[in-house]
Length: 583
Image 1 (cartoon, rainbow, N blue to C red):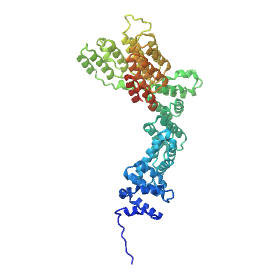
Image 2 (cartoon, rainbow, N blue to C red):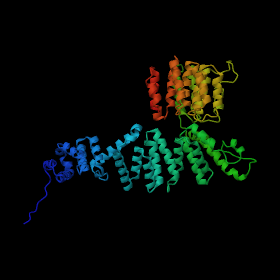
Image 3 (tube, helix red, strand yellow):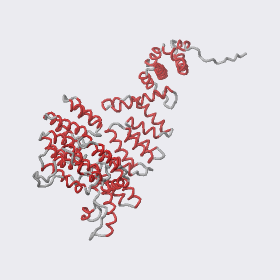
Image 4 (cartoon, rainbow, N blue to C red):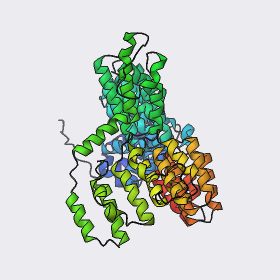
């Protein structure tokens, strides 16, 4: 008579552990299989026999080495030894199933991907990556593709620096265009390595052109090309858009506005230079404004694309966006002049600190609005400012009139250095003249192509340090980030005169000029001069300037930062800290 046996939960794993000591392979395999099923509840007992399990894996003649490795991995996982657990999980081969959703598998996958990312991020150890680790990551990608988790695959591909898997994820996704847009955004915001980010952007631009089913996102492509400093590529795309149908033309204008928002003056100038009109060569000089009437050109048909290109160039140059911005600020100006009058009345006219604070308060309240009513109504009160207070008061007009590109020099005319003047009584104070030059820089900040000749001439024609101070600050703002060689040569000449006042501004101005460019030769020149001069003002100005040259350079700025923070001069070390934050 058969007896029914009721299966009871395993109370102890000691019996199975004793079977591991048997000589018969079948019993050992049976024990390993059973222990693998109950390891989550009996891992503490199994841990006492971990050496036996490890010995089984190390025995090359044992038939189920991978099973022993999987069991050992789970034991080490429960013991918190994740490095050993991952090592044995890799040794388990195909028995380590990445498709399982257990805590053990998820923890091992996370550890494997982290280890793989670390190896891929280190150039010297990239060739030494364990093929078993690569196999696990590959299976993880296959799982993502099978489960339609394409965004997760894109994220892992970017983290592990696998551009081949990035391309595969985009190609396999049901909506390649959406996947490319997600990959572009993730690349720009999540990838920390500048070198790999640029490689990824190049790959994304190529995918936009080659992946079937992906509608070209011209805005994203232009953004990628901008980060790659490919002005020619951007110009080709924008030119084809504005020469096309109305919808494409409007898209081209929108991309132009988006690129202008990044305010990379040197890049936008190169793009604008590439967008020459498609009509006769004589049109080239007539396309900087919005009105593009032609007379006597080759053929009327050619005039159709000329005006759109001229309008696009006005967008890229900042002429149109700045004009719209000025109009908006002027029409929405809600500053309270009565409040300023009350502040002026309450402030002692002899108190220079409060006097300067009131002037700066007015400048900030009316920044960009072109409303200088308070200044014109209180000229006598303003004239009480002396020396650097007068310099700041005059410069404040540049804040108020910021963006008045066409009328800036006219507005500041009464305060600017006068050609041929030799210091007569009618000439304004040097502090007024220096402040006016600084104000011109503020007015033309990042759009200073037209004002640079005047500022250069003003700096060359005067030996007064205050005027040179204002000229250097104005030049730095007007030529922001362009790396203009002529401007650099002039400011470095002023720096080498070793005047404390002019030299400090020259150091800052050079930093503004080279902002984000990080030229190593010029950085060495500035740093070497810091060690030669005895003026703390000059060292401070140069240190701040060097920090500006490292702006956005990320890891490529490390040599400069390392050199500055280890310098014996505390001011240069202070600049090194600024450079680190700037990079």
